Amino acid sequence: MCSSALIISCLMNCWVESLSACFTVLLSSLNEVIFMLLRCLNEAMCKITLDFYSINQKLNPEMIV
Image 1 (cartoon, rainbow, N blue to C red):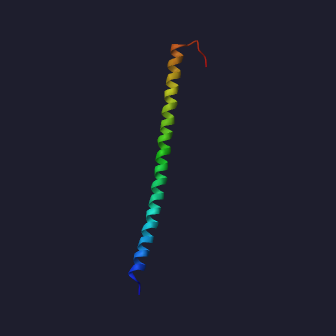
Image 2: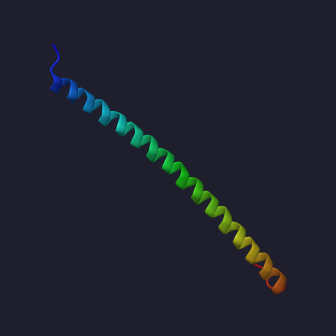
Image 3: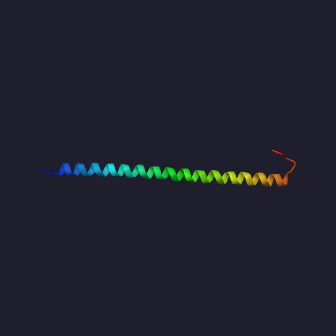
């Protein structure tokens, strides 16, 4: 015969484990989103730098970097 305390304990344990797994998945997907945003930001910064470089080349053609 199962006691209600044992059943509740088991349910709580399962709930904590599933919450932990859910949290892990959430963190890893959040990590992927952050990396994606950083990559996009990096590409945008590269493009801005190249744009400034080309504008600078047009304004100051004698400057060779």
